[in-house]
Length: 169
Image (cartoon, rainbow, N blue to C red; front, top):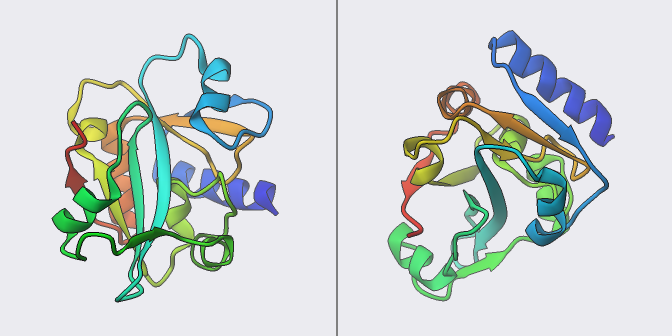
């Protein structure tokens, strides 16, 4: 299933004339596992968290540079959901909203969030930093795909997901 979803993603990106660079690697579940396979790449590698607001049941996808600390309490306050209210989503929720399981939820999976039920929090450094490419899993954790920051923003807007830019300094 991941391969057909990846093919659909690649077809969508191609239709938008977005060029990508892809690295195949064994399946990985953490940034630490992934990094040895991305040696020599220039650009920003991301880590991604799908979260839910326990009170309102809102869903959030956070995409930050891999070396950033994401403090859920601080982020909850910035998003106005109240400290202590952000929790990690369960795999069933990820499969339902983004069509991916654990280790595969990234901004690229927002293509499959047809009703825009997931809000994206994007590390502003990914699109305002001096990165030639930003890297995400393309519907599978057995590959990492890079695209230009401007193309990422265009992709997100085309899918109806205007990102909330946030600083994770």
